[in-house]
Image 1 (spheres, helix red, strand yellow):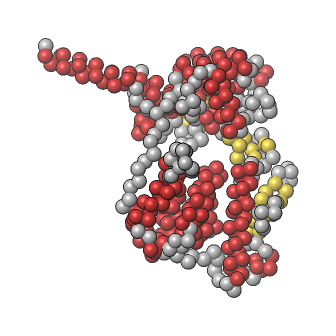
Image 2 (cartoon, one colour):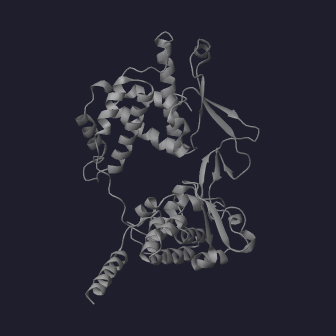
Length: 400
């Protein structure tokens, strides 16, 4: 890869490949550190761009060190770009412990920061600067396009984090900027209001079977009935680590999805949620839609991952699943404002509509606290009406 200077690949015994950025041998011998950094990026067009960008940054830091006669590298010169580079390179940086996909998204925000305000001196910044940047990052990409509030939020969150990292390194100007940022509150992007309903699920299942995408029908039933995130059902492909075995594709391995072995002989499904680590149990005998979909799968095929793409015979990639689901949903008459990810919110909202206890909803959704479950509750007329009826009943009792 010519646009990824310093990139080296090493082959494992099983044929898989590890990727590293390696410093020039002569500069490493002179004392440049780190002399090598393990890289974890997926083998996708987006992942390759992120890998190339990281190699270019590391190479530039190394060459700057050499040009400065071997001064400590990477250096801090008071600019936002310099603290961003430290955050990306230093071994003690929080970036190094982020999950691979979170790291990719975070670096995207850092790329925006460096391209737009990287040259600014942190010691000169004031509140109006941060407010102006937030507005700029959230502005439409072009005329007649919608604003991008989530882009602004994620980029500002990343800026807060790298400034905070500068505080831990003892830079006084970062301490000052961190205090200023702590006094500023930016408008939170509007929460989603759409939910996937039982009627939507039924329509998607029927259309999926009609079109021959039976895996989509099963996945949708599992997501909605069991209040599960998409990745907890279909799994995800992450860069290969030292884990042996498993289902592999190029430099990735499939993890975290539902397996047929997660269902015991009593039809109780047990699963640890990826995001929270919370273990949930579901009695599938109480979920007719799931039972119907399972019954449609021949017994000899109930091995390994539950959701297998018909076209590849392997678990879905996230984007492929989402696109296929959307195409089916469109043909099933599901509004375009309703996404596959809204299945979880729809299930939680339905539970609250029916008067389920908060603690029960929390456990069903795999949340660690009730407040998180409540955020998924996109309150409906049933809930407000139930409260109104209770209040009316109380008033009637008081007048008798």
